[in-house]
Length: 78
Image (tube, rainbow, N blue to C red; front, side, top):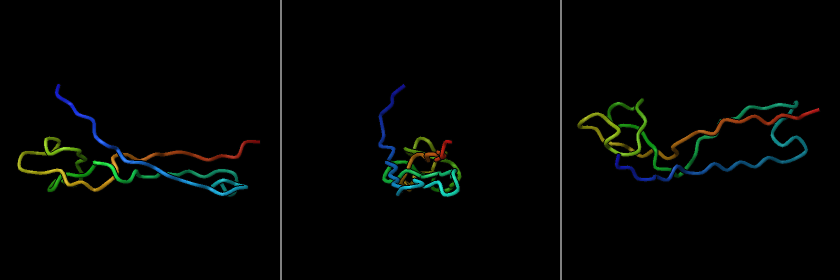
């Protein structure tokens, strides 16, 4: 397989104390990456892609930014 690496983007989150983003003790988050080479196909917009070859014939990959989403939980432990 011929493969090349692609920039996935970054995630940056900052939370102030004392609860660090978890008011009430727990909070779930999902942050999409920004600045990456990920996108969707030009006609089949539900299909994720990085390069044109990821799409059906005649379509192109439209870069929309991030290539992943980070899901995480901040929880206050007893």
